Length: 363
Image (cartoon, rainbow, N blue to C red):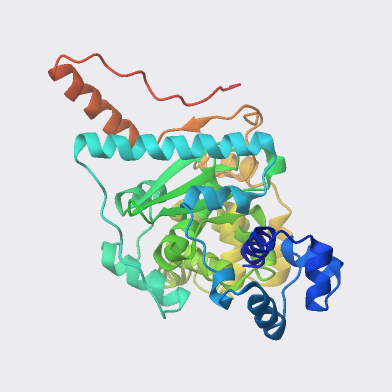
């Protein structure tokens, strides 16, 4: 919000051809303060905002309304360097091709209902009930997001970008998109997708959302705006229903404390990462703090391989070789639409279009 206010303030000041110094002097404020406002690093008091709005002959609402296209606003939010900007442009292009494929095949997605005035816990319960999921695990949350109107694009982003995921709602075309950073570990990608799905259900009218990796970590999310805490609580409840988790613990583990192997079994059952499972067990009072700290330090992959004979696919570690070059990984639904569009073109005797670019890979 401060970033948007600063952008609008700078634009209005430049429209009347005033320097920051002259503008500040006219309002009886310091040029340093105006600079902080315009850079989004300071929040003005309501009295100051009214004073500034009156001088500029604007309504206060002017500073908070942004009618630009969603992707144009995204580039402002990301504060990206040139490399990341190119990655975001690639994301925008992929979203455009996705909608084009839907239009060509006549398979546009309907939006899921938008909720309001509901707790994160209740939202998870209501959405599971709406989808008929009961208390069972969600085996592919990315696919579930897609068929419910939130198109998923997995794309590699550089570590220095500090972006775990992005949510964009194109108001004009009534289309929702979520970018999941494919350079993150598989288990974390699952959590990011569920987190972004929470934004989709609650925050789609609030403009683009850029989430850094800390918002999907329980220890850090409390430092962020309430909507991030809401989305993270929703993601945990949506992926790991409390009733089912408690049932499994009481039915199988009974009164004994959970071993590390029990934790690995539960994480495999719910299809999440070991760390997400540990944080959930601690947060719900099932695992004591001392055990949490002990297990958190352990290497889950080696023990999982030893006990279960293989990894579940949601291992915590990053890939040994991160994708250094930008790479887009089309979803199954995207590939399905592309194949259907190609078959339609072939039936009409038209040349098949070039396959969508998925970027370079250093696999």
